Length: 272
Image (cartoon, rainbow, N blue to C red; front, side):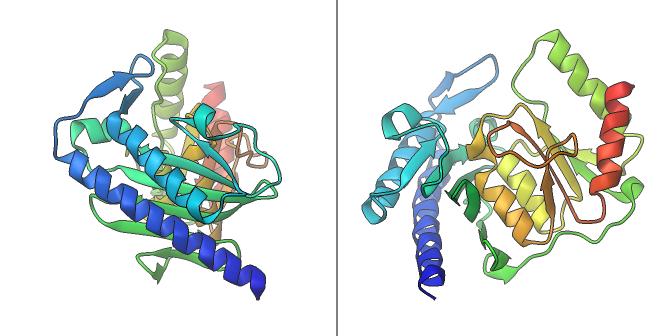
């Protein structure tokens, strides 16, 4: 019971942090943004940095003994290596390009790993006010209502989500678009929301049947969403079919019926 109480407290504090950051994102969404480039198309704003500071300060007040990994200020906030200690893994603003363009698929993502296992997940889109939450073994929820992955069993009737990524060298772009071209013949349609965390939550609530992404930023993109998918009865795995590795910058997710068929389709796409 004590462990359950601790997990409930971890979740409550994470939700509070996400909503506080969400308010800052919501205000910034409708204002002029000051944008910096982390790469050719990879962006960061003052809101990303301010939200990470807000989240970490809030979490550290409650759990000063925990470890912290964040996208924007990892070096200042703690180790980048994931170990067995309770570790908060935070993307303060997933979907920064969407944020800059006023496209409303942006979110705060807060995950907690214990023993390197995702245990708490909070993903909050403050623009459309959707809060996804999960505790390992306790289910997944959208605004407090239980959610489940879809029941679609046919790949050809499935909605697939992916992302192009931030690299624009010809080899990477050609490989990415060739993969998509092949998969488009095997699914109903394709979506790109611009947020890895929200794509995972789309799997969890049944809006999307399959999702994969290669070469995303880091564990902060998937730590919360992967747990929420699993608690909603979905599958999270490496796109090759191997076990999911939170540090590998490769992720796939689906409902429980489509994993094998999708892995085979992706292997075929790599051969085409």
